[in-house]
Image 1 (cartoon, one colour):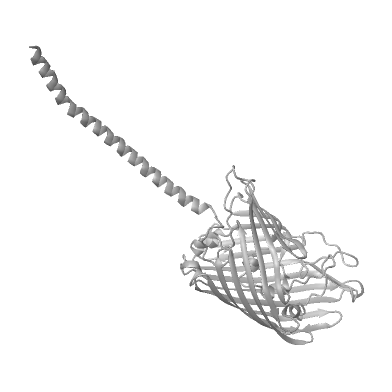
Image 2 (image 1 turned 180 degrees about the vertical axis):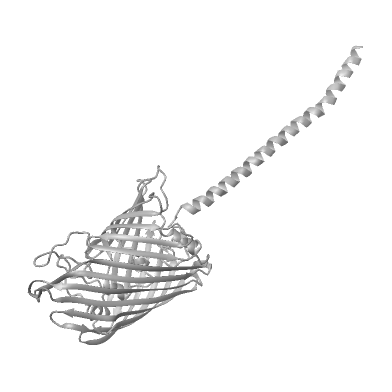
Length: 475
């Protein structure tokens, strides 16, 4: 009996063991299925976060940017219309743990081997009839920014920028050359104002036109167009003051801007403020601009702009012991069209852009010539085109013309009408990497001087390198 009972128990245990193994196997399968589902969810979450980070972060030192600028913005890899919109939208508030701590530093070395014929093209441009500026600035210094035959170091540009806190970002740019250091920009800008508003203050480049807000290392040509050099001077319109912009919530790109500046531009808005010239409190210069860009898809982008400026201006000629006081008005329009061929390193890309400015200077003589008219009306434009004919290589042509309207009225000479001046420039640029380039540019100018027309050739071989973390450039 005992043996029968033992046999029965053993048989029941062997029959129950397969059922227990099956349960354990089923449990393991359920756990593996749950783990597999968690892994899939983590992968999906990771992919979403990567996409969001790519959309928010602007890694300006990353290798991409098929645009031929020395340090192209990664924004340039976006569809062109999105690049246009994002070029004026703040990047957003920085994380609280990084604000006020991380400082970005970039250095640009910009030099050239230059040669010009005859008296020299820079000298002739300084004597251009109707545009010549023989007077000094308010500190009594006369500026000569033209290159000289031989080797030239245009400057060493030092750029500092940071996300200060959730409310502000700041940047400053200092240009250092053999004569010393010059502050080009020092800007504090809001990042969290509502309704598409952005407020900037400090010393900043005005938003008028297109080239004016660009630093020299970001120009498409080695030098700036004649109309900028002769109207605004070597550094363009960079002033101490404030700028307010509004990006309209439209399906197309629409930006409005207004600025108030002290007014200290030697060529257009210089105020000396010493007897017998009257004092004028700042702000003395007001500007406004609007930018419009339709959505043309991911390969094409187009932007139009209008600008208007009004400010106080004074001149004083020591040798003639006479001067004038009044206002300067400037009106401008600009456009740029870009085609993105979606090929490597800018191959097949095409750009055409142009700007036009008209200056009306309405001054009145003071002291010995009190009440006498002292007026100037001049204008000018440029048109340029660039083409990426192979990866990292671009060629460009630019036509400049100033003085289509060119009249002056002074007490000494009465009303005078001057001829126009022109220049044609061609350039070839090889962008070796995202951080260095070589540019060869040649040009020929026909300059109208008060004593007659003269011409000059000029040629420059430019080399430029950038290192450090550089902020993204505008569209």
